[in-house]
Image (cartoon, rainbow, N blue to C red; front, side, top):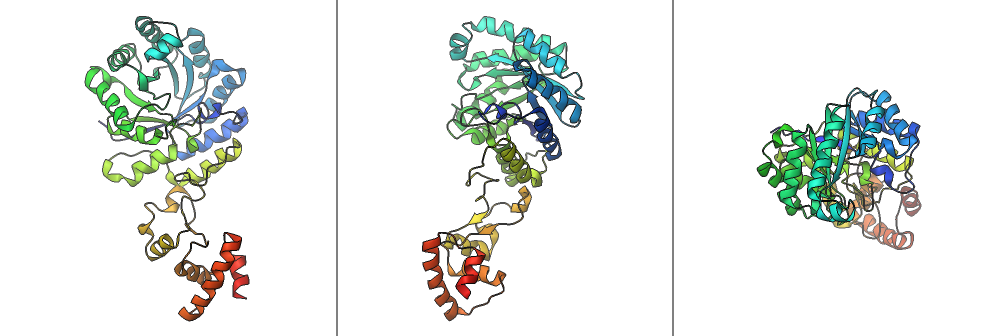
Length: 379
């Protein structure tokens, strides 16, 4: 089995479902072009049947972007699939992403249906989608809570109908990592035609486990991950693209790789944050303001002695210029001395000790001491 992990970015579809994050077609094209430069393999460009705007976005992104596969979402409904197929007519490589609920909760309470009818509808949807594109992805919605035997039966049926990718989503963010990994492993063990398709994973973050579940899925055989920039998406969001990419890059011993240019992660994160008016939390992994900032005196001292004491990746690897030493009342003499030397001031221990006492008084009042404050302190 290949160790390459394919990146399916759904920022412009699932991510854009967040209230207040909607983009115009022109804005979506800007983001799509940056995703292409980033190196994602698939861009889910929209849900064409949902609105004329979404239909147009899929059409125009298909024209503007040539390297990634362009994917359009549909329900397992003929009209949805027709709209998706029509919207993708200009795509160099098009994919229809169709599907239906797989858990008994969804089958009963959302579709008022039965397992037998769901199987029939799923197979019919895949076959109809194949009349438009060769590349058809099927999503088994709420697979995280689905019965394993039925999930395997459904997976086998849609692959038999021609699905090239089968998405096993933890739609509600319900699973624990070990449980989700075992679900993917079960599919590989019990679906005899599984190697005719790529198994994909799409995890939500309701319990804060989306990235952990995604990595567990990869380690158990999945080779496509469905992610968004900054982890944006419904409710608590989706798996974060940058977290998965950097986890696989840092933990090289796992043997997996992607085609993403990680040095573009921070710029793309900022672009999406600004265009969608969705601030990135300061302590967000990889791209948060504090991801490479050190404030504790103990950490600052260790970092200044050797960066690997407290950093497991280089900031430049994700497109950030450098790490930051943030001076607060928690900072030690080593950090103060370092920042003063950057400003051109060198102090021996007695004078530094005296200055440090005054520095702490200032830091208690001002909370964070910047270079202008240090100049005042020196004077």
